[in-house]
Image (tube, rainbow, N blue to C red):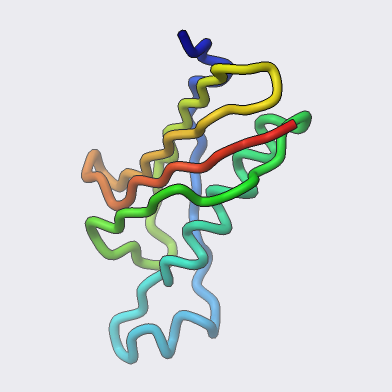
Length: 106
C-alpha cells in the first residue's frame, strides 16, 4: 500500500512574457511545456530529496492565460523507499486546467 508523502497546494502565476505573444497571437496562452516544467520544479522544491524521473501522463483540459492565479494541487505517494508517483492538478477559479503524473526517484 502506498504511503502519501506530500499532500499540498501551491499558488502559481505565469507572468506575461514575450514568449507568450506568439502562442497565440492576440490571445496569449501558456504552452503545455511551460506548465510541465513549472510543475516539475514545484515538485522538486517541495521534495528536495526526490527528483523527477519521467512524465507519465499529461492532460490539458483548458487553456491557461499568462497572469492567471492558479492553484497547483500536489499529491505524492510512495510504494517503495526509492520510488514515488506524483499526481498533480492545475486549477483556475475551481476549473481544472491540467492533470499531470510524474514518477519520482531518490
